[in-house]
Image (cartoon, rainbow, N blue to C red; front, side):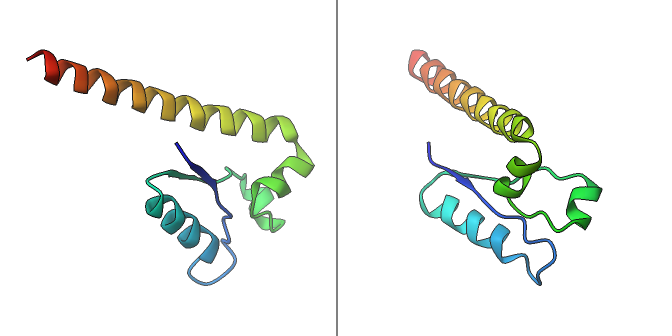
Length: 88
């Protein structure tokens, strides 16, 4: 699974970081992820995981772990579904 860590260019028109990350993920059948910012962090102009890591690397690690856990669960569910279809 390819994971694209995108920018959330919330201050720019049409949010190009978000659009490009989603397009890249779609092109490789991957997943695009974006940092979760508080309202205060957004107001300061933070846009990407690097910005967030400067403030608090543990938050980045936790956010990435949550995404990867979700991807693993989705893949497991898909695998189990295929196995059930084969058994029928």
